[in-house]
Length: 187
Image 1 (cartoon, rainbow, N blue to C red):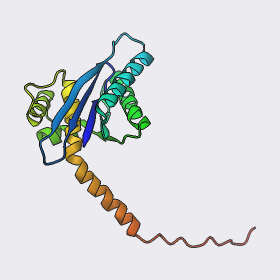
Image 2 (spheres, helix red, strand yellow; image 1 turned 60 degrees about the vertical axis):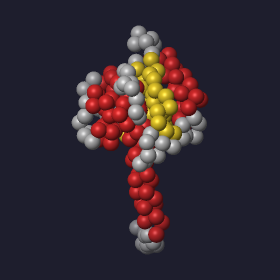
Image 3 (tube, one colour; image 1 turned 180 degrees about the vertical axis):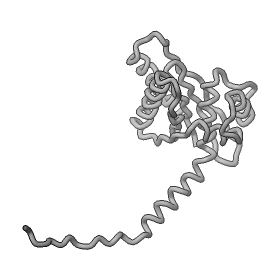
Image 4 (cartoon, rainbow, N blue to C red; image 1 turned 180 degrees about the horizontal axis):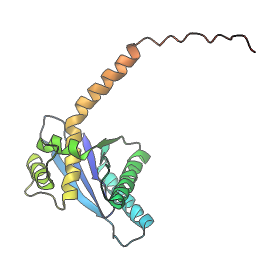
């Protein structure tokens, strides 16, 4: 499975491609950051993020795009920019018919480091180790994008089995009996 991880942001949008399957060594296929100038008009910044992600999709042809789930922070302005960049990434993938998965920062940290409270340095160190890199990817947004891809590769098999079980359970359940509507006397 080839996964494009996206750590959304307007100024720095981390992107990383990891290939592999759970239980086997993973391979990094690419890592980088799509940058936009903070003094640029919002619409142009979003177009730049779109163009950057489209270029990554063209070059790496992933099977799925995994985006960090936006969570509420104290700085509303930062959250808005992150959410907008996240939507652009999901739109680019969906336009191509690629599935999109979302993972929270704590899910990713727990999957990669064993602790949902790990700091950026710990995530970078584990990404470096897991992908057998010489040094942690810089900036941290790039390492976070790789961590998203790793998390998804490791968690996807279990999530797929769970979804199949839920679907099978629903299909096996008899349809609920709905009594016919009786018309009573009208006043």
